[in-house]
Image (cartoon, rainbow, N blue to C red):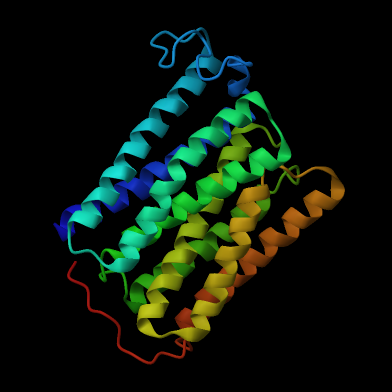
Length: 273
């Protein structure tokens, strides 16, 4: 049962990651405009088998993946509550599941009423759901809580830092749909790595490493929420500053991990992989 829950939680996190990227592309490409004011019917049916054009296909495919993801998250939550899972796992999955109906409504509102407050709420909810299922995946097993895994996670986040800065809105590239997807793909991966490192260092008692990983994850959360809302020189400067700060925190965490100066108080949990 524990192995099944672990796989379901990992699948939920992976699907949510893909769904967020699909959502970014859908919004950036203007595919939601195919619905006009007819959401959720759009092309005439809730589930269009024959979309009228490419933007319509993107909108429908995004909905299909959202439906599959919602079912998987719900199934993962049911499995967690039916089994003897950790209370933290049940809590994280419960929060993610309870937010699903609100995310559906907010998704519809981003199509019919494209406003700053709605867009922000939509991304905050999406990232909160992703955080919940990712934490559940991390907490379903102690295999990851090793110094080597922490080094890998912080090194991955540090390597993603320069790419995140390079994809800063309108810094080096035209901030079109592919670049926005790349920005979020790198940012979400770095966020997941820092969140994993934060969780694992808590188990290992590495307080000095946990501080930059947690701070870096918080900065990335804010950047991802506002990544599609950067307007003007001030907004671009804020996004660039945040990207540089997140990259610096990830690099600091990686340096501390390799240096071994993490304030360890325990030997960690041995893995079985």
